[in-house]
Image (cartoon, rainbow, N blue to C red; front, side, top):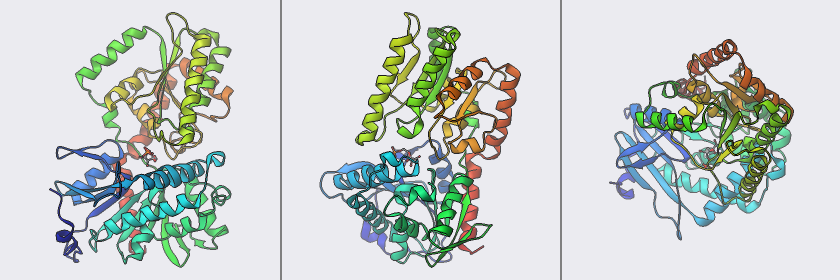
Length: 477
Ligand code: F6P
């Protein structure tokens, strides 16, 4: 039963004796159905910390309200309170579709050609962050630790500080962080960077991303950065660090639901002896899917022996479908898959199986395990967990090969993948062919090397390392 606002508004401040809670804030919040959390991936890791220590998860409900949205809805599951709020249609258009996904997303992914900036987008972005801060601030206790996620909520910390919040506050950016020359194209860059300085710790996926950030601090904002990651700028002191996000590999290695196993067997039988290559990506222009299709076409041109022998599965759930650039990429992919299939398909062979739907984790694991090559070739990506999932899901005694873009954060860790430049269509076509023909010993060695990294830097390790650094950052260490 949601608590009434007035009853809860008093007495939530907490004292030094009140146990410290973790407060997670993200644009998307896991679904809670029938008192249970429907979580996967990242949500599982955060859930565990929330369940152990007690806490609160605040964010958007994923819904738009007709008219002005009401108060946030609270649901309690054990020691965790989920607080979600609807957005007005205008907020959704200008904050989520607008500044988040038409300005920051393409900018952070180096797509200046797709970046549009409007003052109305930016002021709505700030207004929604202010609204979130208003709804969150009175729910906070003095000794809470606040962990904000991603580019949608950069100004939240600053909004909370203006309201007097003194709690430890950190943000983790799941996306890439753009080079100074790219960031400064966006007129509100200084406001954004000033807002980031309100946090005690800013976490990045890779050294590259952090370097891009500190480069701006030193060369554009006139601030100071020490080797150990202490930053002084805009009259604030805070810390920066690199925390590459991981997966929980055992869930991709372990036993599966027998129904899914039967489904996998049937699917394989239908496709006979043909080898599979697989790509799994949200439908997004940053993922390099058109270039991947072109590389597959090039491979079929250059190595005719693969015709009728290799099929590509591209699983691509649509996303952000109201944004024009996403409509365009959808159309482009349909045209390209149709063109390649029209050119090469035979009565018993479809080269590209282009699928616009999502599958559960077990079915994806089966797809990964049945594929000779995994294609993770984004033009730019913060980390890309599909790369790690593909490797973890492989049969250790007969593993497939990962073809990985050098522009995915994962390439910094998975050095035994076949690393490619996704803009070089010939290079990707060659890597596909090499993956399909790679000898067993080499496949095994490469997977083992990658599994060492995936196991040692798993999702729990990522969470614990960040939270330890956050505690230290607030103490000024
Ligand atoms: O990885 C970046 C990200 O924006 C996440 O924050 C988000 O959960 C995911 O992509 C899906 O995007 P969206 O929430 O726009 O559907």
